[in-house]
Image 1 (tube, one colour):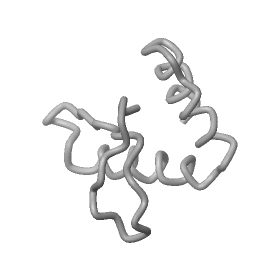
Image 2 (tube, one colour):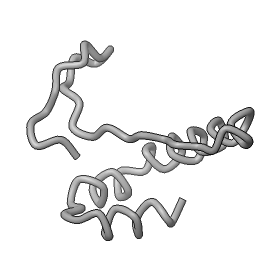
Image 3 (cartoon, one colour):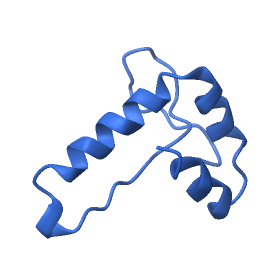
Length: 69
């Protein structure tokens, strides 16, 4: 979660509030990152999940929330 929203020139004109980095071992990079992106995008459709994401205040809370994916 960013301290200040960032203008990323998004299609909806809204500033970006959250940035996620996906790190995958090179040996598994061929398809695993796509599966992770699919899972994250499905969760981000859910308003309850998005609200929880915005309420996270620590790395441990974020890890627990993302562990549900």
